[in-house]
Amino acid sequence: MLYIFFSRNVIRIYDENIRGSHHRNFPAITEFNGMSIKQEEIMFFYPDLLKKTVRPLTVLIISLCLTLPFLVATSEAQGPGISEQSVDLLTRTGKAMAEVTAAVKPGIVNILTTRTVKVGSGQDPFLDDPFFKRFFGDQFGRQRQHPREQKSSGLGSGVIVSSEGYIITNSHVVKDADEIKVTLTDKREFIGKVIGSDLKTEIAVVKIDAKGLPTVPWGNSDKLQVGEVVLAVGNPFGLNQTVTMGIVSALGRANVGIADYEDFIQTDAAINPGNSGGALVNVKGEVVGINTAIFSTSGGYQGIGFAIPSNMVKSIMESLIKRGKVVRGWLGVSIQKVTPELAKQFDLKDEVGALVGDVVEDGPAEKAGLQRGDIIVEYDGKKIEEPYILRNMVANTLPGEQHSIKILRDGKTRAMTITIGELPTEAQQSVESGDFQNALKGVVVQDMNPDLAKKLKIPDKIKGVIISDVEEGSIAAGALMQGDVIQEINRKKVLDVKSYKDVVSRIKKDESVLLLIFRGGSSLFVTLSQK
Image (tube, rainbow, N blue to C red):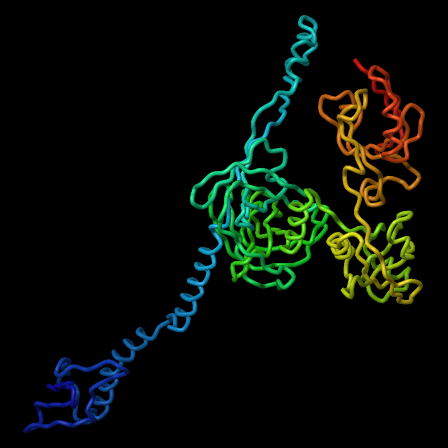
């Protein structure tokens, strides 16, 4: 019988077939791959069939058998794992994000609005049955068609930007609200008042009667880069103080169809209904955007959200607080994108700049010498890649200031100086529905401009005013609609809002009105009369 003893100091081999004690000493083994070896704890037995002639090979095999368990144990101990450096980095990153969140959350509020809406009860198909009408007439149908009022509530978010109680949110969050309830992080509730709202950018300022409030500092959205980590903080679906993380997916998103002036930050940080008006913050805990909308085919988050840049928000906010309205700069031109076809026609190497399609008579651009066909390529030294860039830059310019521009005309670059004017306000371009007590009461119109005409596909030869709204329940409701162009009233031409006012102001309360309107590519006559 062959006996193998594995000891801490030696490996001994004993053979009972050999007279006397026989052993071989191997180098002392006290440790194997970091594992300590205890004394006299392993013994192997091999039967007599191991002959002397093969004992050297046997010793080698036995040695391998002794080391194999340690190799397996070592392999298991050194399997896939996370390094201390990685754990430390992730731990520090998590703590940093938690610090940013803790600093921002007190400045985010919940906004609950209530508003009154008119709801039509709808028409029951049963009431349209000729058999039913034969016996009961239309009295039931008329009663059911009368709209009724009901209360509706809405949820949104807001950002405290002043310790004096000024809060930034979206216009659609507070639009037509009868009451605005603002809830702070500490559960205090206040009634908010709308200081000003700008539908062209979707920004509104709300004020609450409170002092010493926590605020979120402003960041510089112009320094944002694609790929930066951002956090979206708000109240999606009424779940207060929800924080989601993502990156800046893109910058300068325009033509999204959300607002008139668009320069959105695109992010994949989750934004859902109720997040509107909340903050998009950078890793410093600074507001770099106001969350506004999402792109979705389901109504929920699909990885594409949009936020208004903080620099645009600040400019609008200051104007609303100081003046109660937004004062924007104005060039007095209609501009369009340079397409490949247009670039070829104008002999341009690159498809950049803003092509001037029309110049407003006696406007700032005409006074400076701009002409139709000019291509504006720079504004105050900044390159104009797309028309919206010029539009936003001019809008953020104070009226009366002089600014330099560069244009391309007939293949040559020219430098010009232009004095920016003030963009006409909606009040100057429209008539409120309560101004007249006649058949046109409830009709709101505005001057036609090249942008509107292009959007509504109105031919150049059509002149008049565009209907922007028709009050429900008014005489004109059902006969006139948004987008109609009023060309004549009682056989008198209407060229602009001023001439519209002159004609309509002379119409008596019970007088019938004959209108010539343009709708759907053709002109038609419409009559309005008191019933």
